[in-house]
Length: 96
Image 1 (cartoon, rainbow, N blue to C red):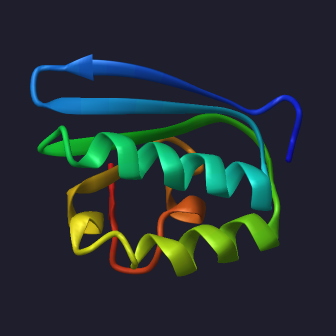
Image 2 (tube, rainbow, N blue to C red; image 1 turned 45 degrees about the horizontal axis):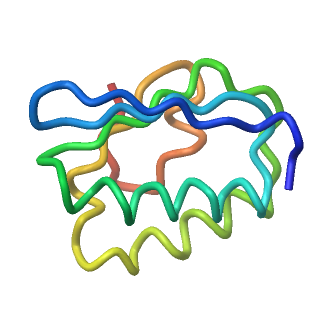
């Protein structure tokens, strides 16, 4: 796992905001997936902010995309923002 990776969490009304910081690899993909499992049940929407990502590794993307679909239909409540949103978001996801 990338040692410089962090997820800053902020709650705003019925939404959670996850700000990703650092390198995104297989281990950090798992960390993000665990955070989504934790927060997506407690919120109407989860925003994933991607502006502070540095290096995005292919294996991390593949792991994230593959496992995100296993979140029991919750992926439609996940919105991606920032300059790396289109790279991180799986196909047919909402990017702002």
